Image (cartoon, rainbow over all chains, first blue to last red; front, side, top):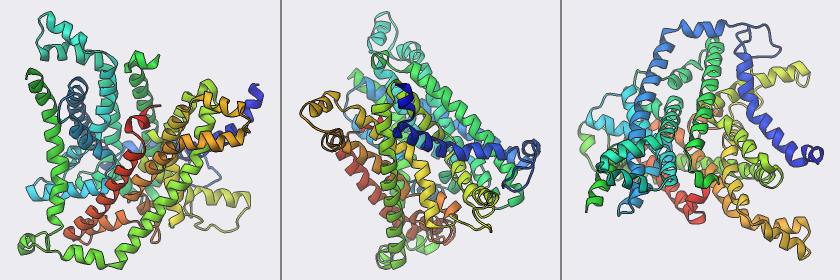
Length: 266
Length: 283
């Protein structure tokens, strides 16, 4: 039975698509170790020099620093705001709920070029200097819907009588949230934080309008594409980034699954 | 009353943030669209000229139309490629289907910029595809086969979006009651007839959602055209970017952005009419 299944047209097609999806990523990783400045076959020899170059490039390290900083800041803010929003919409069925949901989900569909330039207008009008910080402010907005989604699906998973029990035992409402709700949600909170972090860390379109002279990593990467001699270093950097993001996301997915409602998992 | 106060203090901060840094800038963009310029006297002049020139400039219309066609092509091809994948996962992959679905999604976790960039390296004239074909003797001289063209943009964006298109189709197919298919077979339907008359119609909302999953985000695309599009592959998003970064005609750029925003919101509205949002995210 399994033999027939393996060779079915469906499975062959699936394998083919997977192959296509993974080829560019695998090629990037292979070529990051190739001892040649141009990305062509046949491969020359094995080298780690491109990886060494990364750590000797102050501009690049500064871009990494900027990206880490706004990634950390924006995901922290997005997770906090997302948690507040999620508790509000899951625990209270009050007026204003659906408007909030609609507005907070909008960043998922709005083209980033439009959101980016609208913030450019705002910052110009009120005199906020273009900087990594400005891009971080924007990244909070695009991260909020993801944080909301992850945290509210965790909240749906356990009934609010735990909070009520804590309050019956003398906790204040806010005390119950801090000591009962937040700890129970902690895997989801961490998952939300990590997902928001990878979103910010990878984001190019909005950042390209707002960072001014504080290039973030994607902005720096993009600017380096014009210099063919730096290509191998960029490829090595890309290989590192892809591997790290993939590991972070696998961890996030795992967290999200353990954090999800037992009822839905059956 | 108590509840209302708690609700307000929880929802207040995120609402305020969204208002100040999301709705307010979009509102300000609307104001800018009626201005003559961004500094000095022009800053305070109210005018409808931007809208007038937007409506009469055939270059804008051509590019808007071309972007729509590019997105349409991407959405159609992606849906056609995604349907058999979703079908295979739901009906033939058995117990492994969640694992295999995850396998499809994993590449999308890596940076979108880097994946586009990888395609640039593969398709470029001094790139991998060329050197591979040279090595195998398929071609004799390196030539830019697919790079810097509309097709390069289309191929690259299909690559990016196919996994996302699979998701809603997968969900829609998964919800089909297997008893219906058995009933069709009992009543004498051949498998392909059952597919055409039961499975396909029931999965169409998922297909429509998948179509929009690719159509909506690619409509505003500007990074991929910058990287692999060349002159003929430019899209409407590039025009907006130009108005803000090069031409520095922010009021005109605002009008163009608003036009796109209206188009996108209309599409999103249609999407939410077709399938309920909660159905789309569930796996």
